[in-house]
Amino acid sequence: MISKENAEHYVWGEQCDGWHLVKQPGMSVIHEIMPAGTQEARHYHTVARQFFFVLSGELTMEMEGEIQQLSRHQGIEIPPLAKHQARNESAQAVEFLVISHPTTRGDRVNVD
Figure 1 (cartoon, rainbow, N blue to C red):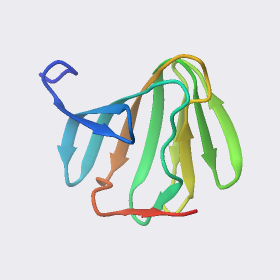
Figure 2: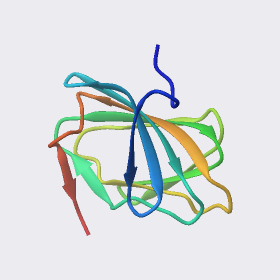
Figure 3: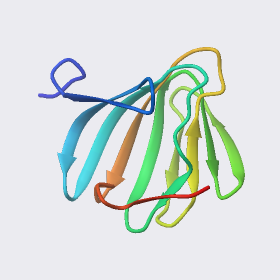
């Protein structure tokens, strides 16, 4: 069994947290928390397809210039090559799952 309490933890950005729930070459599942006012770098993946699913809070997802506001129990699929950026523009932390097939390790290209 895996949970946040026993999963491999890492910090990304300056203050965002991630826990590897599944860390395999064919699939990755990460539980993430982004504090208010944080964001990731805009990027894309050449092979990986991702699905972001909000557990609590509100996530702003920009994909190819279109902005979606995701609330609790809402998700969005990010296809390969789609430029995207997750942001927390709210006043509270957002907690979500990122499911990637295959893993995004070595498959990320940052863009301006």
